[in-house]
Each structure stands twice: as C-alpha cells, then as structure tokens.
Length: 386
Ligand SMILES: N[C@@H](CCC(=O)N[C@@H](CS)C(=O)NCC(=O)O)C(=O)O
Ligand SMILES: *[C@@H]1O[C@H](CO)[C@@H](O)[C@H](O)[C@H]1NC(C)=O
Image (tube, rainbow, N blue to C red; front, side, top):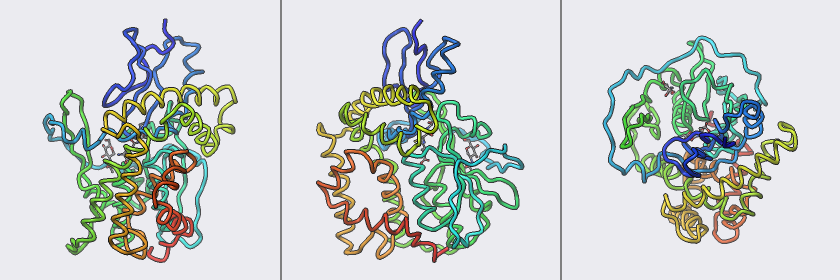
C-alpha cells in the first residue's frame, strides 16, 4: 500500500500525479496547497495529518481563478438561491492572537480565520493594519481545518464580523476588503453591504461546480461616483489576484535550495517550532519544499512565465513601478495608498523573507514604493480615515 494513497486533495487541476497507484501528491487550489487524505494506513494517518499540517501555510501558489482559466470556455451558470447567510452562533474558538489598536474607532468586532503566510490573508491583514482596525486571529490548521468546519466556504481568509444581527462571515480577500472599505467610507450597515456581493455558481468545462463572487472589486457607494481613479484601482486589484500572485510561487520555489529556505522562513513566522515537535516540522519542511519545487515548475508553464521566472517577476514589478512613476506620486493612490497599493503590498509581504523578494529589491525599483508602504501600514496611517 502506498503511503500517499490518493493523495492530497486537488481542486482545479492536478499538478502532480505520481503514477497509477493513485499517488497524487499535492492538491493545489485557490491559492493554497493542502496535504490531505494522503494515507489509508490508519495509524499513520493521524500522524501524517498533524505532521503535514501547516504546509499550506507556505502555499504561495496562485489562485485557481486565473485569467488563463477565466478565458477558457465556461460551462453554464446555475441559477441558485444565493441568500447570504448570517449565523446566530459560532463555535467558541479561542483566538491565536489579538491585534488591538487603541485608536480604532471602527466599532467593528472582527475575527480573521487565516494561514499566516497565505498571500490572500496577508492582503487582508495589510488592509486592517493600515486602517488600524482591531481583529482577532484564528490560525487555521490547513489539514484538519476544524476551526472553519462551521463554514460552507472552505478557503481562507474568512473574516467574521460580530454584528447586532449575528455573526456575518465574509469570504474572499477582495470581497472582504471591498465590504470593509464601503463601511469605512459610508458607515453603511455591513450586513446590507454584504448582500451586494452575491455568488454565482456555474459548472466549468470539466464539469465541476464553481462559485464566484460578483462585484468583488466594487465598493457599494451611495452616489455613483465612478471616476477614473476608482476604475483604475479596481483594475489593479484584479491584476493582483489574476496576474501578480501567479508569479510568486514559481519564483519562491525556483530551486530546491530556495524552496527549503522559503519553508524555513514560513516555519519561523508561522512559529512551527512552537506548534509542532521538531520531527514533524522537519517533515513538513521536507515534503512541502520538495513538492512545491515541482509544483512551481508546473505553474511556470501554466501561467506562461519566462524560462527564467525571475524575469517575469521583474517584469510585473517594473510594470507596477512604471505605472506609479507615470502618475508622479508616492503611491498608486497618490500621496496615500489606495486599495491597489494595499493589495500589491499585502501579497508581496507574504514572501518578504524569501530570496525572490531580495532579488526584486535588488533588480527593480520596487523598494522605493515597498518600504514607504510598509511604514504606512505598520504606522496605521489610515486610522485617521476610519
Ligand atoms: N480568492 C480567494 C483565494 C483564497 C485562497 O485560495 N486561499 C487558499 C490559501 S492561500 C486556501 O484556503 N485554499 C484551500 C485550503 O488550503 O484548504 C481570496 O482572495 O481570498
Ligand atoms: C460564503 O461562501 C458560502 C459557500 O460558498 C456561501 O454559501 C455564502 O453565501 C458566502 N458568504 C458570503 C458573505 O459571501
């Protein structure tokens, strides 16, 4: 019997299939990789589940919703009830940590279910930190995922707002940011705002059911002030989700050495030493880094990156920096960051400890924008607008 019996769950596309015995090592979907269902050997199962938990943390694989994919012919849209649920109760889960800003005037009570180095989770944290909005963090175990069992949506980040009407879960990093931005700007009832982001469900070309959130880059503003800036900000946010994140993984896991370095850094920021015994941590790092190295190669092809993937990374960074230069401002948003700045920054800071990051700092002008951004986010410079 093979150790990895039917492999790590997949979604979207198989990225690594190791032979007919069903050794399907890694499932990649969304932006993440999870190691699940990998063994039928009962006694080993639990051990491996635990041991491999956290590998997703390093999963800097692009989202399943790539431009590539969106451009492929679609199946049909299913007309389904898209009532957006609100919960009366949420299982009592102790937060892993609490982020508190004394100056927070948002009046929001938020819990972020996340993986520490998932780029989409970093994006949401960049937003909350910049605006100085307090939140609790629940670090989700990427294999067992008990702490999000209550949710029909199976990815992270999930943000839960404790509202007078109940607990309101918000799915998807971009939708979370749009809904909260609307709240900051108009102080509109968050529950009403959330209703403006319905899901459409469709069957894609290989017959699997998919769900997408409509309008996720749109704020729900009272007046119709569709300016050039708003349009531009939207386009860039979409670019981050559909293009920019996809250059990350092949770069972070470009060589075996880099993959190992990256996983060691994930271990550090994810406090794996605290969370796992050392043999387990080593196993995660070994299996994770080896798998992600191979997956990186597949993704390079899938997203048509250049042979030297760094070139593609530099290209995208240069594209971003040139566009800011053309505006002649400090940030894309002007003298202050906008949501596009926060999105690019959030995704990039998920790889700050990796060689790929050092290389873009060295070979592009990204630092001229990145470090002022970091200062703005860590200094909660947006707090005055909340
Ligand atoms: N479009 C989503 C993508 C979120 C996503 O793909 N998250 C990954 C982690 S990086 C995930 O949860 N994958 C499923 C899993 O690991 O169980 C967003 O922007 O929030
Ligand atoms: C979250 O996702 C679930 C499952 O896809 C869906 O039923 C629910 O309506 C979503 N909630 C929001 C606020 O979008």
